[in-house]
Length: 202
Length: 202
DNA sequence: TCATAAATAACCGATTCGGTCAATAGCGTT
DNA sequence: AACGCTATTGACCGAATCGGTTATTTATGA
Image (cartoon, rainbow over all chains, first blue to last red; front, side, top):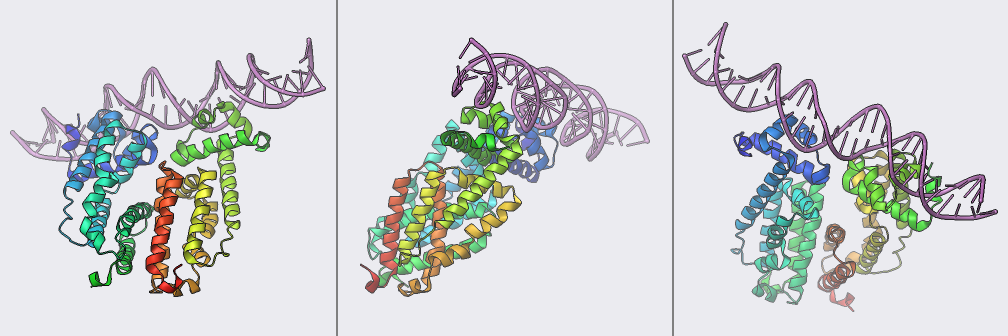
């Protein structure tokens, strides 16, 4: 049923998709109305049904699209190259923010769908956001040695995870990307300076 | 019109208020329905109208209630006593979290109302969350001297503000208060140890 | 037991819901 | 210009839900 939609131009697809993602994210499945989505996308309500058949199918399409996009984003995660912990955190953060910029409503849609306990999200979310997974990806054993107190490394990492959530909130609330990222970069440098042994400082 | 409601027992008032706060916070003013609120509160829809007259009056009552609660919470902020910066941050965080525990839905309701750009919130929110205000309240000049690099103090404070937002998100998503606060306490100690000059460490 | 107050089920007109369909607008072909 | 074909939409459908009212039931207290 979705072929009609996929035949549209990429721009129009993106416009409609973003409108639908935003509405579902903001209001949830039941309270989001096709009328709202159509108005936000600048098309008629009938067209939405022409493209997707019904409300459920539209939601399912968005779900599949977001899961695929998420997997792709994580597959493209090649941050093992940088050898330093703080550089890796920085790189991962930049990647996350760039993704947030490129696909603005995916994160909030996923969060909203998770709140409605959509079953198929459980798996996709678990593999992507599992703290242990990200931990082994970012924090290596040899990183700890650079710390004045090696036992601090894990806690610093956990702090970054919380910090990332706070940043995401601020970004959603309209704060400018560049300003926040600049500040985050300064924070990283500061932490590195204060936590590393002198021999590992530039 | 609200006298009927205020005549109820405190527990029943709290139950109804929390249901209404949760519904308005989750769905916004327009999409939140009196039916939903009544069901969540375990009373009949007619009773809600009996207590508050109409939807707008209910919303206005919640708004007034939350603003009053917020002001009271900030008036009770007596954290000047502790002389150390990190202790002050810890105390402020505990206060914030205790408030979040005591009045679970106020924060999200205020956020939702702010998103709908309710005019009277502008003032109340500005005085309460203005970063400059909190900054002068928590970060004093003599604190900076304790840092190995005094210029780090302000950035550490900014980091705490972001961290607090991340913590709030996790708390809303159902993580346990005590676990998060334990971790935050550890983070504070760790930062203090790494940032302070040795002479200021216990 | 009875009067009174509190709570609700049933109901109201109006609006909005998801969904359909016939009419229209756009557009390449001849 | 007239045609045919398709993409798009305005108008419409019955059903559900909206905010709000009212008549009836339930609880209370003298």
